[in-house]
Amino acid sequence: MDSRGLCRFNKRQNNTPKIGVRPIVADFKKTSKISFCVAVWGRKFTDNFLNYSLNSLLEYNNIPSLSKKSRIKFKIYTTNSDLSYISQSVIISQLLQYAEIEYFLISGVNTLGNYISMNHCHRDFISRSKGDILFFICPDIIFSDGAIMKIYKKLSKKIKVVCIFTPRLNLETFLPKYKAALLQNDLRSLDSEALLRMSCDHFHSETKSMILDEELDETVYSGGYFYKKRSGLIGSQFHYFPVCIKHKGQLPLPDITVDNDYLGKLVNSIEEIYVFENAKDCCIIDISTEKSKGQFIKEKRSVKNVASWAVENTNRIHLDLFLKTYLFLEESPKLNSKIYYKVKKFRKAVLKEIESIRRRPSNHKPNSLVKRWSERVKNNTVKSAIFKIKRYIYLLIFKRLRIKEKSIQK
Image (cartoon, rainbow, N blue to C red; front, side, top):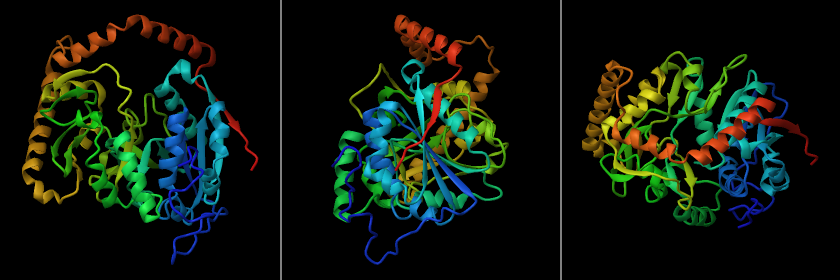
């Protein structure tokens, strides 16, 4: 398959619709707007975005169907070296049938780092999109067929934000099977149940590290899960990703990332948030390589280290979200009542531990995992110090990531 999305997975040419399905014609004259944002740079992430993420967004019941409801703008933040690679791909020309595309050139990524750069892109996107419905798209996320329309339909007078959780999958083992399924069925993406079934055999080590009572490399502390072999995950999360936001006027801006501190700024109550708690209803996954790993700590996940992380990284909204149960299961939750009981027990224990930590003196010692992780980070002081100095000087001069709108002639 071409590395720029030049070949569709399906066999149809010139974007002709499936047999028996009427082609969708986007209405660009509608006044209401929906804005999509993706910040993507680097050849590997760009390839994943074009070939898998954007390809899934162009499945019939995603952006094509949404384009009948509203005018769509798709804003792409990328570097100068990746701009022509993206803009000249065939799949981008297919996106133009349903959306207006705006490009924004960014510079300073190597100095600021990926997370700060992405945060600055999101802040710029929010600032430019007053009065729109906003969709945040990560370049390594794959959407099931119909996911975008399901997310859009959950918005209402009461619901301002729709949140998702995306289990991370092993790119090397998952993609060959995923591509084969798309080719065999002449599709851009799979439906929720098919994507869920395929995903359960390909969890990334980072997802596995969230499984309770397993001695695995600890990298993610934002929840806890139990695993049922050949069935999937069931557990609770503090951080959900706000994939879609409905608003009027000027929105507040995230200080860290949209899935970290932002929900506490967007809403006053969890009643204003809809969370897809069951992947069977709306399956969205994240693909990542297993080849590049950092320095991790091998230790069993416990109530104490999850609670310690939560005290430093959550707000009231996150704690309310933790009371929800996320199901990434092929089977009915009724068939997993024992695991469901374990999740409730774990959740109760974590919340109790959080209350206990907050009652302690502010100078209490952190648990062993947090302490050892802090020591590990401190040991890498020289490299870290150089990076921080460069970043400080850059922000002193430019204040933020440099972003410039770029016109592309088609």
